[in-house]
Image 1: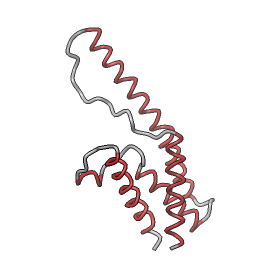
Image 2: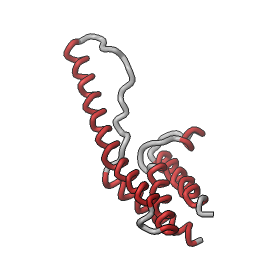
Image 3: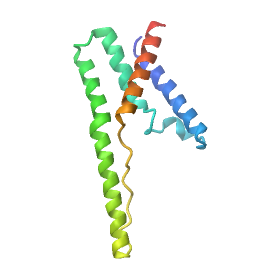
Length: 138
């Protein structure tokens, strides 16, 4: 029944995320239950939970364990850098609008927060691992 452990971790993390948002003064909407992004990252914690579960069941040399490590690398590096690029492009767009004093084409502002900082990755790894080990022993 190990499948239920990552699901339980995901539910716990989403409740924590909603609690953090409420403490920050953000209003609660029913759709808040399914929102993604920011910290804590539910998909990242699920990856940590699945990695830990695979490690506990199959060992460190499992292909699945190696795959989940790649997910952590992606969250910390590739997506974080893409967010930095989005911020740079948004700044260029603002500067062009200011220089030409014209209406530049209106489009969506690029999402700047699509990855996680190394500190956040370490945080979700530790929490995901601890929650998984706790639920695994129950």
